[in-house]
Image (cartoon, helix red, strand yellow):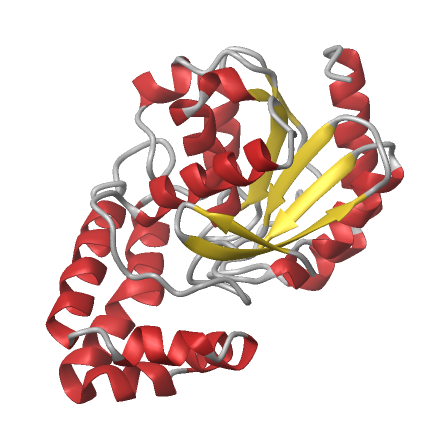
Length: 280
C-alpha cells in the first residue's frame, strides 16, 4: 500500500475504485484499514473513489504520542492533509464509531472541505465515554506507570503497531514514560469531558453548525446507542436517520458480523442518499 508523508508522519493508505466522487472512510476503535475495507469496497462498487487509511497510532502508520490537541482533532487534520495531497477535496467523509467522531471533527474544523457525511455507530453517553476512555488511554497509562515503555510495547495494541511498522518500537522506547503518561492523560481527559455531550467530542452548538447533508445509521449496543444516533439526526441541519439494526444488545458491543453482513445494503443506502442530495 502507498505511504504518504502527512504532517510529519508516514501514513498508510489505499484508494478503492477507479473514478467518481471522492469518499474518505475511517473504521471504528483503533482498527486498521482492514476494519473498513469490506464496506469501502462496496461503496467503491457504487461508483466512488474511496480512500481508507491507518490513522496515526493505528495500523502501519507512524506512532506519534504528542500534540497540543485531542487525538481526534489531530486525526481529522491528518485526514484533511492526506485528501489535499490526493487532490480529493472537497470530499464525502464518514466513519464508524471513532471514525464517526473523526468525520464530525473534520466537518467542524474544515467545513469548506466536506461535501457530505456518512456516519454509523454514533458514540455518546457516560457509559461509552468512560469505557472508551479506559480502553484507549487509561490502560496504557497504567502500563507505563507500572513498567515504563517496555510494558507499553508489550501490550497487544502497541505490539501490533510494531509488527506492522518496526520503526514504531523505537518511537515508543525513546519516549520518556512521564511524557507518554502526560499526553495520554490529556487525551483521556478530553474523552471524559464528552460524557454529557450529544456525541463524544462535539457540543449541540457545534453539531447545529454543520450544514452539509448527513446520512446516519445508529448503532445497537450500549456504546453506540440508537438514541444517540437519532439525537444526532435531530441536531444536524440536513440529515436522514436509517435504522438498519432494530435489535438492541445490552452489551458494550453488538456482533461485528451483523454489520459486515449489511455492508452491501449500507453502501446502496449511502449511494442513494448522496444522489438524492445531488452529491455526485
